[in-house]
Length: 79
Image 1: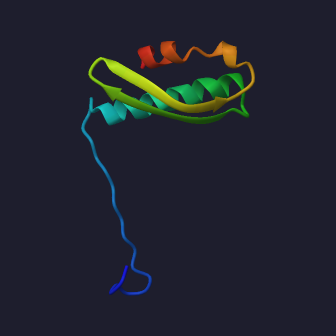
Image 2: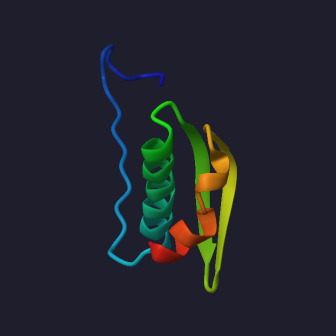
C-alpha cells in the first residue's frame, strides 16, 4: 500500500461467537478431512461447507483411496 513504511505488516482477523454458522462449517470441513485421513493418510481435501437455516451444502473435492468408505452426510449430521 502506498504511503506506508517499508516492512509494515497489516494484520486482520475474524472472530465469531459460539454457535455461529461459520464455526459449524469449519467443524464439518475439519471432520471430513479427519475421517478421510483415517482411511487414507494421503487423502487430499478441498471441501468447503456453507450453511443456512436448515441447509448445509458441501462444495469442492475429496481425493482419496476407498472413497466409498466415507459418508459425508453422516459426518455433517454428527457434527
